[in-house]
Image (cartoon, rainbow, N blue to C red; front, side):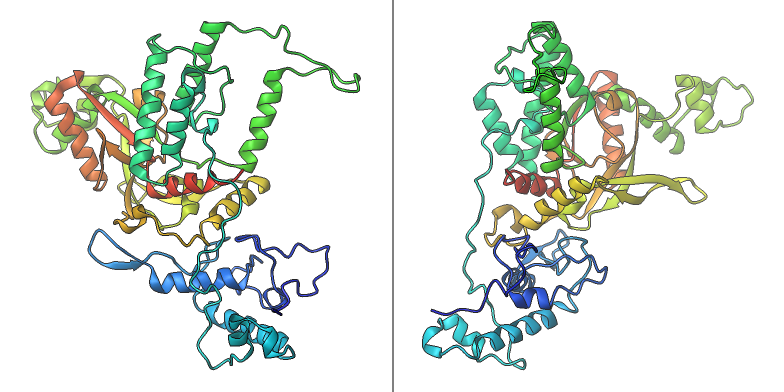
Length: 467
């Protein structure tokens, strides 16, 4: 049967494939591109455009406050600009152009879908060109083992452990991300205590945090030693000096990072002594008026400020090991590839999120856009996306002490405390940690997981499908 021309007579030198579904773009798609307010020149086919529109109307989620919100927003996949005011006009222009192409084709040569399109008028309702069917997914299935997720710990993991952690980290579920981070933390702890046995011969890959990378390198050096002997080899033409296998591995990792970039905030599980929060507890006591002024040693009968009190009690290091900042997630997967820029503002010098910055390398930015676009045309609804998604979250405003040494960074998102999902604001988190110190003293232990959140989980799930 005859169908509308999908090649559109476009010149071969121009790539006319849809960046989302990878199918060919029609002539009407290029004649009537997406009207993005930022003029980013991103465009995709009419089927993906219709699917985006229908998903925004039919797909809702229940928020924590009981309200229903549109899960799929009418935003440009490239720059996240709002295209809700122009998307229907763009679809109508494209369908009109397709109808004109089919006007000279006999009805007997057209499919039912093309017949509808041929006799469609602009005043009619927009046709659903997706037919309500699931699009055929292109590309391979997710990788069974992705060593870039292990933070350089794969040498101490069995093949089955690597498969299981890869499955957890690419599942798309925040709680499974938390579980994967806890498993990696346990492996790193075994390495530090000399209980790990090398289970794979592969070299360490890029670590999500500095502590994991240093632990892996130190253990590998102790177990097998380090030598360049026998690793160098000459180039094929024999003119250039040889390179080591280690150098080849590093170059491969650089290319892989550009092609399949990891989120800017990778899940991390750490166990901290409650002694880390002693300064926070003392500050809380001072602000609550629970500190005895006589303990300051000033002897003037005046109640000292909390800074001078802490300096007397704890020396010059009078600030807490961590501070927290309230933030709000915009609901996009792109947020996983950006870090928050935190600064101070106002007369009270309060910490706040001033902006966000993502990858600067053009190749890496293009790869991130490709990963994000992959999720736009998926029709299957996963169970995790029907549960309430929290938009309010708490970021690490500043970090020091042992928390900083084990890999927690400024801008990380606190998601789980002692294995349970944390729900609350910065004040609630501060109070929770102070309470842990008050109950357990300096010798207690509290486990904190950061970055096991919805956007990071979804970004890793989509990234696993890029080969």
